[in-house]
Image (tube, rainbow, N blue to C red; front, side, top):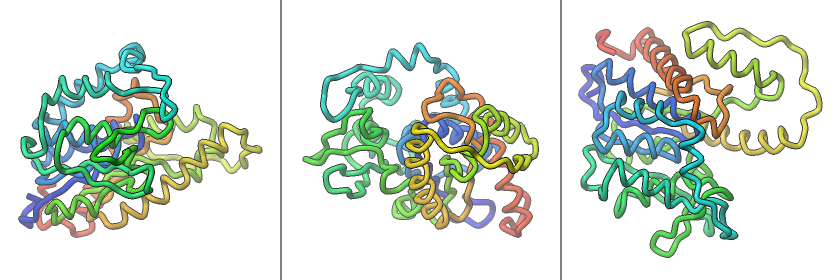
Length: 296
């Protein structure tokens, strides 16, 4: 329940690679306030964290799993393939999920759950709420060009972030009456004008509760090809995320711009950023009259 309002709470957890480990920090803070969801919708990494939570793990248990990830363990999950549709087959990732979740189907989950994927052939959003939970999450996290698409009922599914970065509407369709939306796609406007080392420092400072200082106005130089490609992916992702997030009742955006998409070994930093953002958002919500009592 949300405070004393009695409305059904849902979590819409967005995609964004390793930055999405900050979802764990958000879950921790909400648990501290005695808030638990009755529905969870997730895209990509949001689907991965969300299904672990829906399966019965608490935030501290998911955190323990995330903190155990290092570069060596990540490398062991890579099963290269010569498939023209992707470089990584993804069977080892699916096996890892199965080792944690077992052979669960959607009705077995403790919380109503949906994973968002994209039909790469038709360009359509696909909401997965039945069948194999592992297959659904594997589809939702299939970064195009890296992980091979997942075949489900004659469709080829990839990362849901192409069509729905923060699945607020999907969460409402599951029955949620008050949706907490979490976006982990950073604002691209500050990504090129600031050195990577400074972005990383500011991300850590923000996660630790320090104030985000405005960078000096020394315009960025001409972007190189890597920066152009990176921004080309980040800009549409951020725009989609902001459009999706606008429909949430409580919007949370952790400061994770200094964390790279594949920096899964920086879980502690991402989780801390999620905690800081959740506390800040809840305090702002409380000050704005969102609570009839200070129970969040």
